[in-house]
Image (cartoon, rainbow, N blue to C red):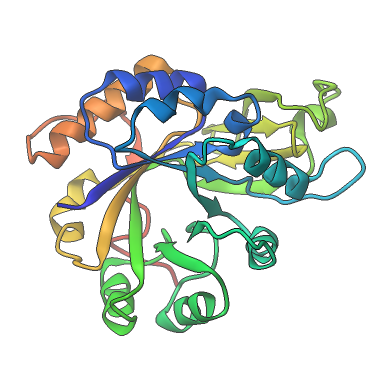
Length: 283
């Protein structure tokens, strides 16, 4: 049985997770929730591993400093609840290379692991102990990569979540003269944009890092391909990523995946979804 890991992006999602019955092994809590001590109550559950999911962009400017935020998270963790970090870029990875304290470091799907050569390079030249497989691989490419890498490397795979379409330091609210005025503060704005095909793309404006994450209009959901994914022995964990979901939406998603992972036939609570490149791959 593969482990279930969940990425949490808000207090509402965390509340939903604490109310559901799905068995979770690890929680990736977004970094901004550590800055306001949201994670304190998680110390009561010793069976769940707590990881910090770091920002997609590690800026270091006058009012924003991602490395300073990471150090603050580590220093505030007096109970040593944090077992590891989900790193999203090479700057964050480089920071942990110079850190004397050891954590379990997991590379997210955005760090290049498109083939076995890139995986070996990352693992051999860093403290990475786990990798999240990228969305770009199709079934055949994924099997090839897993066959070629060492059995010592652990892999997880995202089965649900909105994929970032663009990560930008140019705030769409500021461009529209609607800046929150909270640059460098632990504050978030949720909005959306409409593309030329009239698709609604959800946007999270991360004021702490003064950056935007623009997500795909449709969630990526692998429920129709679970029989294939479960055959990959080297994938030891499946990941559910929450982004902009509210409490009710989060509960519905968790309940759906609880039934799906038990091989119960059920309809997803979301109408629009994609399986990404799993079937057709990228050119």
